[in-house]
Length: 138
Image (tube, rainbow, N blue to C red):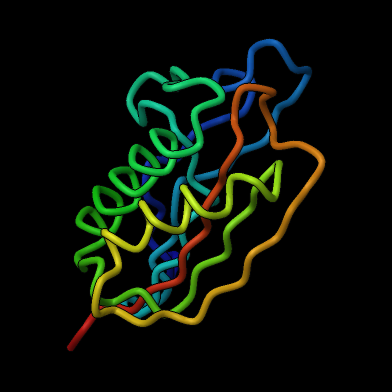
């Protein structure tokens, strides 16, 4: 018996066929029914792994936040339960459009946040990735 529930498990050889990988991962983990850890989310279709809105930071952020909302719902919680976010950008110039769009989804939530600028993400068309930790209310 496992103590954690996996959300949308997958293997990287199907998700990233262009890369020579074979890792068993999941979009999120519900730990002991109280904490939710989401994988860094990007602008992709969660059912098909298709990348959406290549190189458009604002639209990628909107899709990423949709994915986060969907996964939190599958975990049994909502956006209001987010405690922490980590935002990865490939260019500091994306910060304003990304945070402006993200702010629409997190109005009144007040999570703690870390923002990082990195050289690249897992696919070249992705310019923003957002990782979330949330709780499941009693």
